[in-house]
Length: 201
Image (cartoon, rainbow, N blue to C red; front, side, top):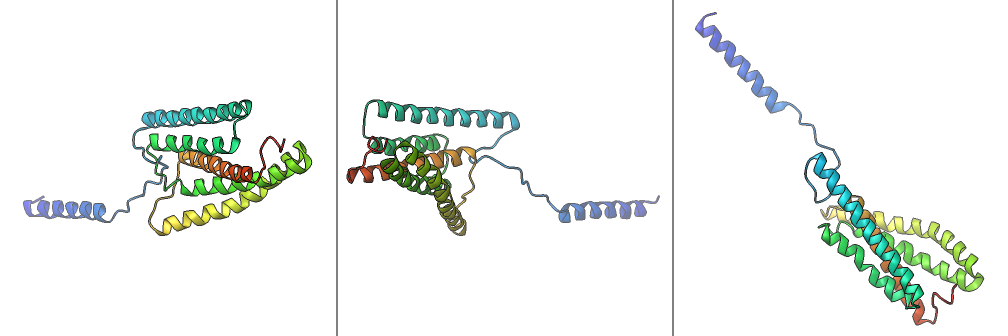
């Protein structure tokens, strides 16, 4: 092969490689990622375990505080309302965006806040069985209502360029916060009208 032929051949090879790199489609990385996290699989496992432990600690703390409140006969509404700050603290510790958790917060507040109303009415009217039935039926109805608002808030955030995608910890703690705040607010309002949790049992 002459020098001229070899040079032309090498030029063609370089041109082909350049075109392949220039026009080859780049496959997007659609693998799920935790919000606020980047790292390998080992670091991801540690990150997920830490998030799970944080959720468990907060859930146990809320449950024990509620039991202690009933044992001490403290006003339930204000205590539950204040307990809503624990999941928010967990989100901040894990550096989660409260804006991205907004749909979950709204869902929890509407869902459990409205659920308390038929549960209280059923308890006052029919006793424990009424409270259970009111809670079950009310939960089915309020899930649908809250889900509608959750979807509307998520769409509103997306239109304004706010990332509303949530990972498991953001979703769980967001909904927990909403549930506690919504239920606590309704119980506080009910107590202003002379309705207490002890009366409904």
